Structures are given as structure tokens and as C-alpha cells.
Image 1 (cartoon, rainbow, N blue to C red):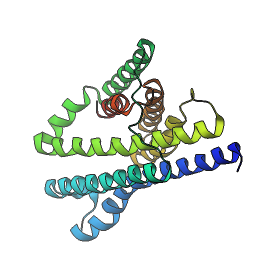
Image 2 (tube, rainbow, N blue to C red):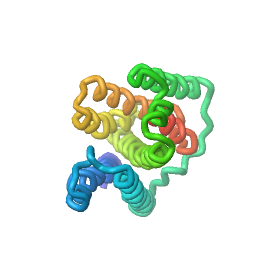
Image 3 (cartoon, rainbow, N blue to C red):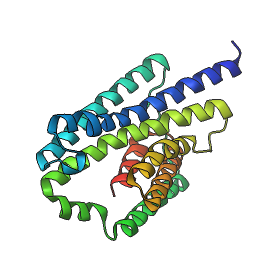
Image 4 (cartoon, helix red, strand yellow):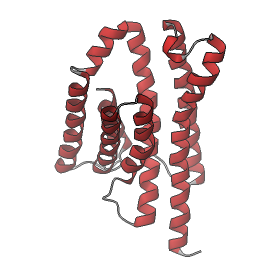
Length: 222
């Protein structure tokens, strides 16, 4: 097998893992729109506080198991460890990462007409707020894996590591689904922008998960 053929094959394998991460996120749809409505007899929008919190807990467990399986098989099948990079970031890299974070926070403040966590805390109260943000953390894990695996696929295919393939793919999957489910052009476009910036941060953080993941988490929850 030639080096080009091997890279192409590995690229498709990484793309498959990115799709599986996206599929892991999609399991929530199965819970929220099929299984739980059958159990509760009401749709998601009519869930009680207890039912909504239970939905978030089950979703977090589902996403956590999905992420664990993907990480395990990525290391076993692809010989790829998401935590392997420990490269330090140069000043210019930090500048890009922090600017991306600041842009996301600014966009969120404009969109929410205030600081998002404060708005959600005021609306949901402490209990719902806690479980909703736990839900956001687990969502970020799978979004991050979409970015990571898709970035590897793009680099293996195109031999160029300066393009945020992971962010582009996240925009076309996670971002597009947000666009469709939220039914708002503005919200959809913001999701696409956020996803692209996730990819940018991952690259400029030198693929160092210990740095990139907390930044992307803050970009999503703030």
C-alpha cells in the first residue's frame, strides 16, 4: 500500500470517527423526541422540571459513554490519543485563541442581550441551571471530538495543517443541526461561526487538549 493510499484510508477512518461523534450527539434526539415522550406522554417543550433534569442526566450519561467508546477505539484502532499533544502555545497563538473566545462572548452577549449564564440562571433557577450547564459540558466533549477527528482527516487528505478542517466539519454538522432545530437564521449563522472558531482555536492551541478543550468549553457556555 502506497503512502498516499494509506493516508487516504486513514483520513476516511478519522472522518468516520467524526461522524460517530456527531451521531453520539444525535442520540439526544432519539431520547427527547421518541423515547421520553412515549414514557411521559408529553413533548419535550412540556416536560416538568424533574423530567427535564432527568433528560439532561440521561443525555449526559449517553454522551459520556459515547465519548469514552470513541476515545478508546481511536487509540486502539487509529493509534490516536486525543491527549497526546503537550505542545506549548506561542504568544501569537494565545492571542488568536483569546480573541476567538472574546468574539464568541461578545456575540453571545449581543444575541442574548446580556451575559448568557446570568440570563439562564435568572430564568432557570439554581437547580435547572446546574444540570443544564453539566449538559453543556458533555455536549462540548462530543463537539470537541468532531473537531479533533475531522481535523485529522483533513490533514491526512490535503497535507495542510493550517486550515481548520475540524471547524468546517463541525459547522456542517453540529452547526447546521442547530440552524435547523432552532428555526432562526441568526441563531443558525451564529452556530456556524462558533463551530468555525472552535476549529481555529484547536489549531492555534497546537492540538493540546488541556488548553483547547477548556477554551472551546468557555466559548460554548459563555
